[in-house]
Length: 185
Image: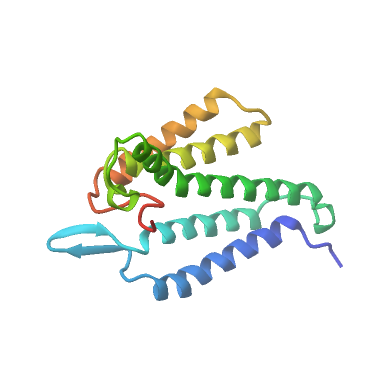
């Protein structure tokens, strides 16, 4: 019997997970569809961002299914270690996203500059961008550094410019959209 290829298992898992999420989870968890028309304005629906992410995941899984590789499931030690580092980097990024804004408001409150809670300020500049910018920049820069095998200022610059681009695309055109994690705080 031929050994099972690692990329086939990963690709198949990604495609199945994405298909289940798009067909079962998102329709049952989202209050709106991909786009919503309210009072003559078109707005992003609750399901748009996760649907886009799962479509990218499915396409990536399909690409893995057709990749040529000799790595079988027996030689997965390095891959598992790499995956563990990725999980840690994403966890740190999400912690930075979640807590940078509230921590900055708390510090500013001690200095007497802010008389409100983060919840009241989460939709105002600059507070609404602090966590997204810090966590997003860390995420992109750390992933670049991991792949390149070294930390560079260029990686941080690319991370910051990527976050700035996301803010310009998603935050500026939609006045009622809160960047992560502000919708959950």
